[in-house]
Amino acid sequence: MDISEPLLIHCPVCGAMNRLPQEKLQQGLEPVCGRCKNPLPVDTSPITVTDATFADQVERSPVPILVDMWAPWCGPCRVISPIVEQLAAEMAGRVRVAKLNVDENPVTAGRFNIRGIPSLLLLKGGKEIERIVGVQPKAEIVRRVERAIA
Image 1: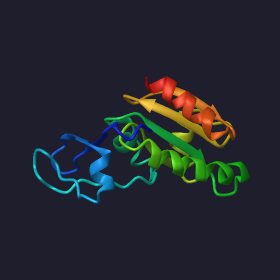
Image 2: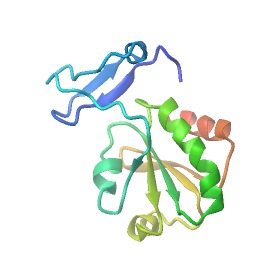
Image 3: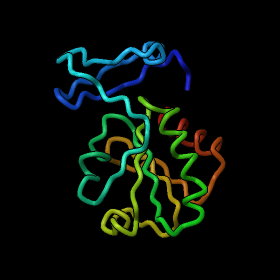
C-alpha cells in the first residue's frame, strides 16, 4: 500500500469516517476522531465474525471487506492465514479483513454457498464482488482485490 495514501477509520462512538495520514501513525501519534475527539481504533489484525455479527460487521462495513472462510482442521487454511494477516495490515483503511470459522458459523457459510475452503470473499456494500477459492500466492490475491475495489 502506498504510504502517502491515508487510512479511512470509522469512529465507533459517533460513526464519523476519518482520514488518517499513515505518516502520523508511524510517528507514534494517537489518532482521535475529527468530530467527537474520542480515540480511534487502529487495530490492523483481522476481525473475527460470526453468524450473529456478520450483518453488522461485514455487510454494513463502510469499506470493502475481505472475509476468510476457514476451519481449524483445514491445512490449506493454515497456509493462507499468515497471508491474510499481512493483507489486513497492508490494506488497512482501504480494505477490512475478517475471518469466519465455517464449522462454527454454518448459516453464513451456507448463505454464501461455501463448498471449498479456504475461500476469500470480497464484499463491497454488502454484496460479493470477488471470490478466491483455495490457496493462492499473495501477489495474486492482492491483484484481484485491488482490481475489484478500483
